[in-house]
Image 1 (cartoon, rainbow, N blue to C red):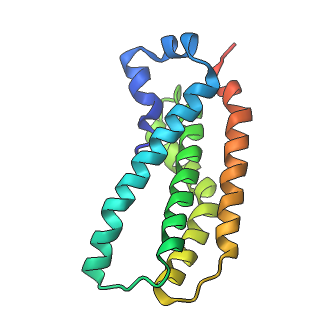
Image 2: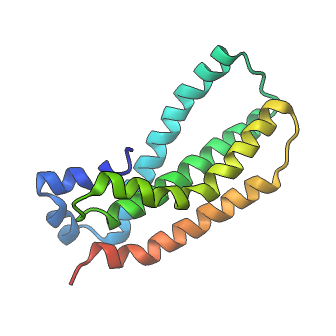
Length: 154
């Protein structure tokens, strides 16, 4: 998972300490989070057209599909960045991060699945999109409040 690499590269290169000394915690959080969101969204923009062509699926609501991709990738990126910062010093990063990510990502994955199916079938229910936006807002606020505790160690 690419979110695990958000802090592992700095830890292996030895630049994590310099980043914590010279960069503010909020700048690091939102910089890494937005980078991961852009990376995931670009990846989804490459994968979705290939999927649509190979599966011969017609999309009835392009705008809703795009909003679902945006909201889903942003929520996954912020959750991944927060949990990656939590796991930066752990020894068993691979297995533990995957186990921790599943319950955190379920509130964003399940509505995204329902909305994607609705975009393909034409049965659109926008209330799931509102739930995804609320989850993104809650994850952003929670990450902003909790990141200082993960970033600055005593």
